[in-house]
Length: 120
Image 1 (cartoon, rainbow, N blue to C red):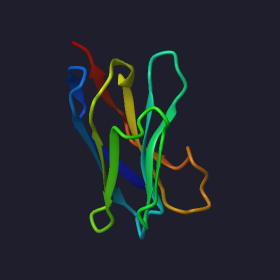
Image 2 (cartoon, rainbow, N blue to C red):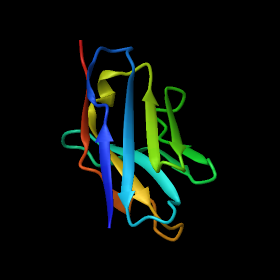
Image 3 (spheres, helix red, strand yellow):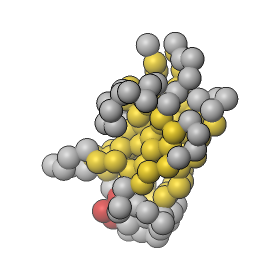
């Protein structure tokens, strides 16, 4: 089993910044990919960003150029730096971990979610 603990959500004004962190623990030998998804009220869960063990990144179109994902393989942590936040970034953000390459995107282990609210 893998446990994910997220931190860093909160309320921020438009144009502001937040940093989300997620730490994975449990029966882990290595992690293929770590990432973040988000879900706004009455919307589908969507990809925010993922990063593989070798550092390859993928970003959702709506966050490119504003968000940066990074990870520490030794500590099994992933961080999402969010800049130039917009009200439409408001959502619950979920940490996601895929232990194996064979596990499709959007599957694997999930954190409990952390609320990000962008509002003046």
